Length: 198
Image: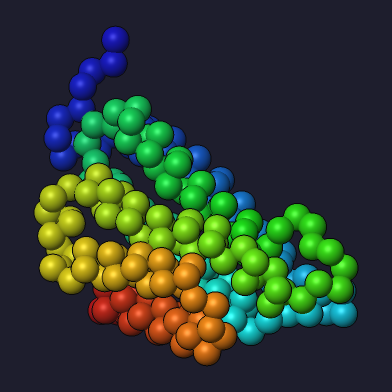
């Protein structure tokens, strides 16, 4: 029988176990994006790159790196029920699925990424919007004090991101999508600087 861990007490073995599986899934997502970006240089004539699609890949790479760094706060979790462990695997997997939607296993030769992106934007932005909402659950796992430390704007920002993703599903205006991805990149960079630059 396993002894219950007191709240606030760090179980190093359990935390390491959780970090390993998160690291594997997160690494797969990062590898998917990096392989996709490298493919532009390798086979530029095969499928024409599209700026908005490429910027979303860069944003997602930044988001995943931030997610992985953010997960160090899981050390504050005392007891690890299976439900929390399963949720974290699910949440990390959402990052991989979102990356896979940007770079499919196969894309018809000669098909521009612009066409692919807009044909699949419902799936992509659906998963991306879900990431922002589930991030609040992930943050809540780290404790009420940690959630509060992110400030009152944190949940507002996350819900705002999800609403913007819903708008991106509905609208296919190219200028809107370019402005949206640039805005997301700038906001994510500002959030990282605000949170970690000391």
